[in-house]
Length: 364
Image (cartoon, rainbow, N blue to C red; front, side, top):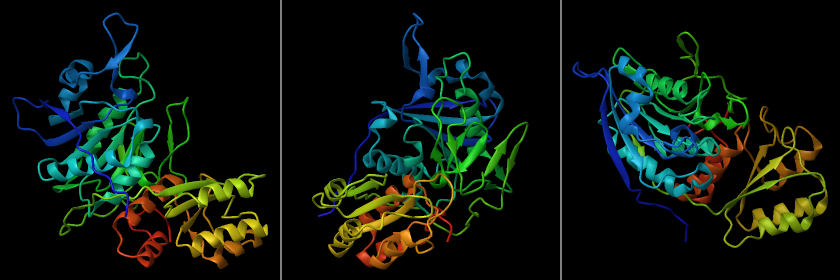
C-alpha cells in the first residue's frame, strides 16, 4: 500500500486592490505559508511576529503603483519551512487548482530552507501549467532595516503579473530571489548568510532583474495555448537519500537500503556519478535493486552531471541497474521519485520517467 498524503490546510483570505478606483491590470493570488519574509517586530520592538497582510500597503507602499488586484491566502498555522511535508505540497497544488481560472499568476511566500524542494515538488504536481507560480522569501524579515523581503516580494509580484499579447511571460514554477528568476526544479539553496541564497548551476536564469527585468525567453517553458492544467494529489514518501563519503561502511549502507517498505533511494555520488568499487558496496546495491528498490544516481556537486560508465568507479553502477539522474538536483530527484512512485502505473514507468525530463528538471 502506497503512503499517500493529503492535508486540509485552514487559512484566512485578505483582498487588496492596489489599483482602486481604476480597473486592475492583473490579479495575483499570494499564498503565505510562513518563513522569514513575513515577520515584523512587535510593538515593543524586541520580538518577531507574523506580518498582518491587511497592512501590506503600509509596509510596502510601492505596490500601489502596480495596479494589481491582490488576494492573500494566509495559512492559519504558519509553518517554518523545516517542517514542510508532502502534505503541504499537495495542499498548495490544490489551492492553485481551485483558484487557477481566477488569477493571472501566483506568488507563494515560503521559508528558504526547503524552498527548492517545494518548488520542485510543485513543478511535478502541476502538469501543463500555463501561468506563473513564483516562490519567494527573504533572508531578513520585512520588518528589518536592511531587509531583502521588499524587493523579493515586489519583483515576484511583477513577474507573476507580466504579460505580452495577453499571454504570461512565465509559465512555470520558479524561485525568485536576489535579482534572479530560476526554474524551480533546477534551483538549490547554497547560502545562508548572504542575500544570494539560491543557485541554478546547470540551467540559465529565466530572468535577470536590474533596472529592468530581462527575460530569457529561450529558456522559459513555452506557452501552450491548448493545454489544460492537471493537478496530481499523490506523493509516496518511501524514499531515502544515501550520501557517500570516504569511510562509509556496510552498516550504514545496509541500514538505509533495508528500511521497511523502502521503494527508492537517491544516492549522492562523487563527481560525475562515481562510487566505491568494493564488492560489498556493489552487492548491497544489487541486492536492493533485485528486491525492486529503485536506486537513482545524482552528483554531490552543485554543477555538472552524472555520466555512468565514464570512469571505472561508475561502470559497475550502470551494470547492476542503477539509474542515472544526469544533471538533476538532489531536491528535484527526491521529489520526482516521490511523485512518480505515487502516480505512475508500473515500476517500468517509474524507471523510464526518472531518466527523462518530464518538467524540464534535467538535461537529456
